[in-house]
Image 1: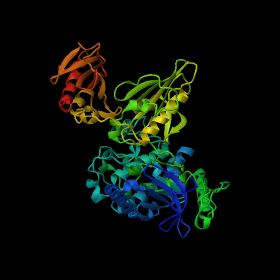
Image 2: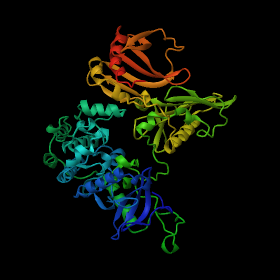
Image 3: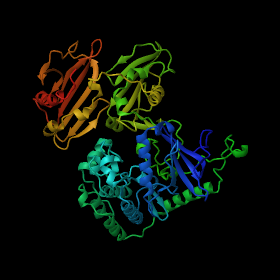
Image 4: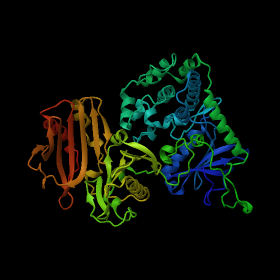
Length: 623
């Protein structure tokens, strides 16, 4: 946390503000103290967002949903003002680490801890469901540990059951993939059984040390949730049948919270946390007591900020990692504050591109001197490598840096092949293949909207130099521009570049070829890949060199759905077909590309690719 600034409020309602816990692109979170000395966490929304009637309506629904939940195993709203110019929400403060933090630091829980966790979560579900709510985002970071047991927080995306159909009509998926029920992952109507599934996943995580559906990418996590039965053989005797029942794919086969409580209460273990967790809870309670006494942090110099009467006020920068977990960040799904488990001030908000912005990015604008202003003279033309990539050179003959920027690399590939080196840009971990190299790449993964890997490669000359610092600095400059004002292309209304390739990919045609299940996976702003047990099919849109002009394959053609399709690659192991949607400028055109990769060699790979391509081409806008 940090001291309050000149623009931060002295009070909100009856609460005196003590410190800033975090600031994001949508709002800020402050630590407050009530007239009775009680500490609260206050979420306050920036006024530029509250002009929207829809936004204010969502905030009011959040408050109403949160206020309905009370009880020993939950934490709720204590006060609010949804009609203020800058609406705010005060939540009960809980002194204790999150389950995510505790397991990450101390490892998996023993049988006693698991019994206390299971019993407390069952009691929490009884209270939540009693009010007619579904939590929808139960996960380890939303479970805080106190001496009395777990406390469930964050009811920001809980919704009244009677409003469920209306509120999910947009098809938005709210929740955390590794703890999401199969019906939630498929955007089907939810019942309280969805929360029971999440409890099963949380118990497994606490027993194993990781989610039972953990994978390298979000699409693989969702695949596991939908189709794979996790191995629970390592669970303690007595707990395994309970977790298996909670993780049933069919909601009707899961136990009720009452049944969950009965089984958990009968486990052969004393319900108590391990000693290390009890000590950590005591640490948090001691820190909370210091704040409540108005002592703040030790050795923290007071900021030069006058209050009533001109006396400087002191606020602590230290409050413990559990503070943010205890904030009851209700509505984080639409606030985008992006904090989870660490009380750190956010001077630079996380990057949050909308889907429309991601598809309309002008990538070459991001390599211009007004963005990369610290790399010397811009000595080469911008080279467009398609809609999602661009290259250029900065510097002189003997001291050059060749930059290549791309937003189309699949996230799964980044996660699999690259390593985090500890740095962050806009609260996103920076990853790369090598710590030092003359040709060095650095990437960050977007935290909202389309899942994108934003990658900058720097090749320095002379080659004895390290290109990694340049790659990281250039990536930071690009991310900053994207956060402030992303440059966008004004595509024509009939452009394929505005389409969602996963929506255009014909699932009915794909399933018989690559097998069921075939889960689509986003591959950059303009690509989609469907993976199945018998092969893979990819669909992509691009703006690049015309296939009928100068291509080595311009004479390798076939007719698909009345259009000329160019065979870009062909072998028994793959076939890539390209059609031209419409010319754009010079020798470039918007193209549509379909790639087919059978698991078993097929001499008729291109015939199969053509059969898959045909229904897609009929869906495209007429140019």
